[in-house]
Image (cartoon, rainbow, N blue to C red; front, side, top):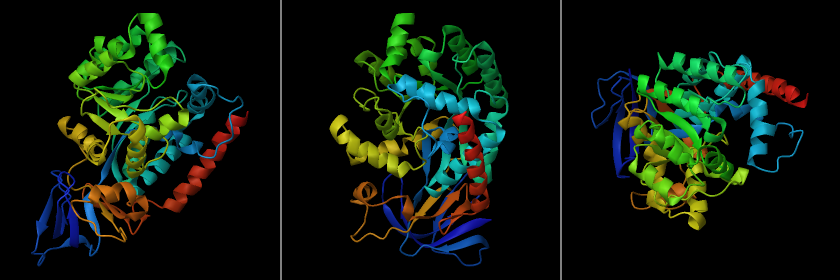
Length: 422
């Protein structure tokens, strides 16, 4: 069955051309949409009157941490962090050790709902739950699919908790890779020895995959690599061949020198920018100089709103980066290019957002990006279509009972917070 969007104003996500049309949204695997004036004698699963509404392609989120969803409003850590390493140790590495099956599921459901309502129908996630590793990726996948989202998952492999945990993380990764599109998740260079990187390299080649890793988010990552291996982080990763794959995602890339930028620029890999997280952790500002065009946006677990990420990146970039409306929009949409060139499924043209944008001024092809920066936000997302199916209707999640899910997430958050106090 198809969905009919009547009287729509379609905004082509590539050209920003505005078109007044009826749109037939197909559920077939090809993921096509059709523009037509002839809507007679057709049976549709849904018919939505889009008069005065904007229709465009939905978003794909380039770097998320769904496991952080239950942290919002949590108790303060027992020790106040004074640097980025202590933020990891006292907060995030403490949380990920406490997550169990129910907490992971609650985190994933909360994240999926937030993504859907903010217009993202595809999520690239980087997961960690150090004392519940086996089967954790399938828990995330099931939750995302209940809401109706497509996904590209990985488990955050790290040596930080000993050889047994590292082995379990590799086993979980390979088990999931055997039956799913996925990446090989690595935490960061400073928590991974050469043996683990070699194992990851072998796994990448075996499954024709790529890695998803935090790169030079903090200066310590570089200091550790230079002291232990006599080379900088990007050089180290490149020596293992990780940057050869167009599936490889390098998150952050803040504290890198000109040579590292050149290596990335000449490689096939993608960089993902996470502006709000960098600001929150006070680790530095992203600068795109010399990195090339393979830059996309993520949220790093801060939230699930890609429009907000694009806006923050633009405003922060005015002082710290060479950014304008066009380059901001290119980064927002680069996640689609990443998924397309690597033949990942779930991000075809039948993924759409329908915006009820009450602009006080005219909006058209020539000023759409100005509206995206200064006016449009997630509150304007009225309907969302994922793989040709309606998953948000009149601002409400359609496939699951959101009230029941939020009751469940609060219960699991309280369980987590009690454990954090012990």
